[in-house]
Structures are given as C-alpha cells and as structure tokens.
Length: 394
Image (tube, helix red, strand yellow):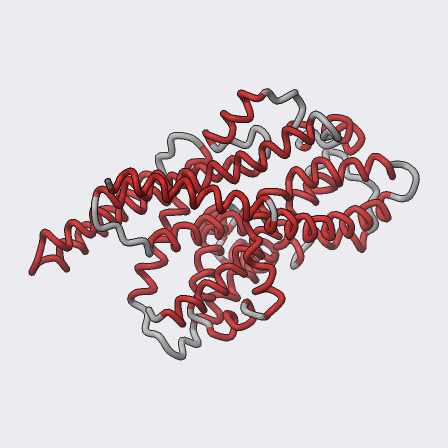
C-alpha cells in the first residue's frame, strides 16, 4: 500500500469512527430522555419519529459499537510483529495508550462528582428511568479512581466498560501476527500452505469460542478479531471499479433502519413461516450489518469521498475525545439542565433545548478536550512509551 493510499484510508476510517461515536452519544442521550424511560414522557409525535424507522438507525448504538470494535481490530491487524521483543513492547505500549486517557477522564468525572455533581438519582425518579440511576449513584474513592483506570472498567464513565475487550482483542491480534510471521519465516518454501492452515485453525477457534462465551459481553472481543477477517478479505479483492460494493454498504443500512423488521421479516413470515424465526432482529444481524457496511465502504470510492469532506476531516480526529466525554456530559450538564426546566415548559420543548444545547456542548468541549487534555496525555503517552522502548532495547 502506498503512502498516499494509506493516508486516504485513514481519513475515511477516522470519519467513520467519528460517526459511530456520534451515534453512541445520541443513543445514550435519547436513552436518558426517552428510550430507556419506563413511563414515556409526553413527547410530541413529530419528535417520537426520531425513534422510528428509518431514523431508528441513529439510536442503534450496537451498530456503531460493533463497527467501532471491528475497525479497531482492522487497524491493529496491519501491525507487523517480527520479534518477541516487538510483541512485548506492543502489549505494554497499547496498555499505556488505553490507561492514560481513562485516568484523565475518570479524574475529571471524580472532580465533577465532588463539585457540580451528577444528578442521576433524582433525574431517574423524575424521568421514570431506572437505567440512568445506575450511574454515579455512590461516592467514588481515590483507590476506586485508580482501579477503574487500571482495569479499564466503567465505574466512573459507563461506556468505557467495552474498551477492555478492544484492548485484549488488539493484543490477541498482535500475538496472532507474531505467530503468523514466525510460520512464514520457518516454513520457507511451504510457507503459503502453512499460513493458510494457521489462518483456518484460528478462524475455526474464533467461531467456536464465539458460541461458547465465558460471559455475555465477551463477544465484543470477537468483534475486534473480525477486523482481521476484514483485512484478509480485502487482500483478495481486486482494486478498481467494484460497483457491487455500493449495495454491500447500503443494504445493511436499509435493513437496520427498519428494512429487516418492517419489510423482510413480514415477507418471510408470510411466505416461509418455518424459517421466519431467523429473520428476527438480533445481535447476529447487527454484527453482519456492521461488518458489511464497513466492507462496502472500503471498496466504494464514492462513499470514501463522502467521508473525506473537509468538515468531517476536521472533526474526525476528535472521535476518541467524543467517546470519552459524552457520557459524563450527559450525566452532568444535560441532567442539570433538565432539572432546571422540569415542569416549567412542555417536555417536547425541554427535549429540543436539551438536544441542541448538549450537541453544541459536545462539539465545543470535545474540541477543548482534544487540544488541552488530549495533547497533554498524548505527550505523556509518548514519553512513557519512549522510555519503555529504550529500557527494553538496552
């Protein structure tokens, strides 16, 4: 891959991750103020349309989260590991790249808890939303702050729970690449066949373990590993005018935005009732939607160009900052604003004000965070990683 093509790929993948992060933000925001409410507030029908097909795709955090995991695995799969020393360095530096940002955002959440506060408990009662009340409902400790950062838990920032699966998934990919590189070197003339056998064995193990999970959320680890599958498929696709990949990208969007539940399932149920149970919306379908959406975009130049427009290219680098700050922002700023307005105006007006102000705050704070805390933590990560590499290489 040339430097130019690598750069181009990075731009549209960054934009895609940014869009995924915004979908996750919107899902959590609407979860607090509508979708997770046991008794739905009095929201005008026009606004309720935000949660119905086709706009329902914008509150499907699973589509975005699964895609985010796959992209993390895809990017990690391109990392070449040629020695055991390289492997150890990658494990350590990858851990540092996760833990440092988590510590800073957890520290900010810690400070907010003891100053402005997170009104999640009172908001939970006002909104009839027990889900939002499960967050920031007990006083964090300094030891809890450190532990949550080191273990990558969601104790001080709910959505961070899934990052440990991305971390372990990418580390496993590094190990896979290391062993694959060893096989290529040792097998010499028969390396191609040996590598193919190795890939098949790894794929079969991944499929088997996917259906024998140690705990329910562990399949997110497998989603990261699917990034390797994406890379291997891409290696065998001819570059050029692959017009078939436009529908490969569009069909998953259509199906997730109501096409599966409102069109495909009713048709299958009416004509082939014996297999209709396989066409009910579930995580397996969404995994497929995410996978083929990404695969289709990777081979559709028109979609890549759309993702490389200047506004997206300017905003996309802050995708990780968006992910880090969005939930504390909702749990603090949005809920405080809601409490100030509650029962003073109609809920529909409250919802509109909350949505607009939270979006503005998200973009502004993400930009500030990226250019202050983000830059500081990146310098810190680089310094620590450089020290580690010098120490190991001695």
